[in-house]
Image 1 (cartoon, rainbow, N blue to C red):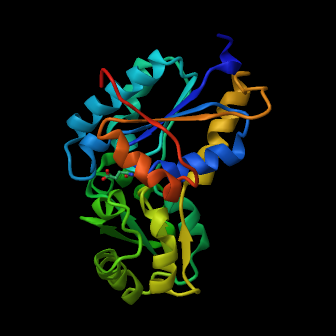
Image 2: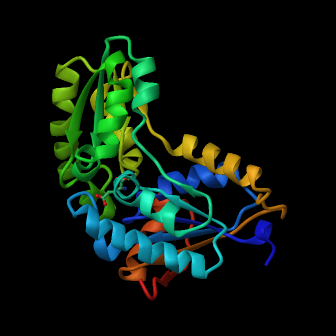
Length: 265
Ligand code: DGL
């Protein structure tokens, strides 16, 4: 198949990467997209970097076997744990993500930013480097959010348990006068309406999905890999029970779709 016609492979521990996929779809309407939710192994945030690296390699093999021309690690935790290894292993554009500390440090007026992310991301060397590069411009307060990804995987975006958890994570950041909150996990943009309600209109909420889609478009343009068809398609796969993702897609993706089983991963 000519490189331009090949699909783009995108993956996350579960449904979080769909918040990135929607930016990719908007930026690159002609591309065919393959999405893998590693739901049998979610959440990644509390697992070892070695485990996540092994999962990322297995999923990337699956996507490359389906002729992916580029890979997007639509997960901050997996990027921190595995992107170097993926880039060594695969001779393709591999685009990852990191919490938007740089734009937040540039935007804050109080000089305090709050970063909500998984423990895996916040404890990684990559995150320490990021704060080392931009942390001098602002005070960076980190907030791990145990339990939140599980609520989102269960499709609970507004219920009392989710609200209570999020409230508890955000309150210390607001008390410390953070005026800019970084969503450093791709699951969290699903909670943006709730977060907006809890944090108020004055607080800026920043995520990285649009920047990742722009970076992917740049990489494909550089390699002359951009698709030329009028409209692309999406195909979804899960390492968990496909019916569970099928039930969530209408709400989290905006339309129903069949979900295939992740095989060989
Ligand atoms: N969506 C992921 C991230 O961006 C991982 C969440 C998890 O599985 O813990 O970090």
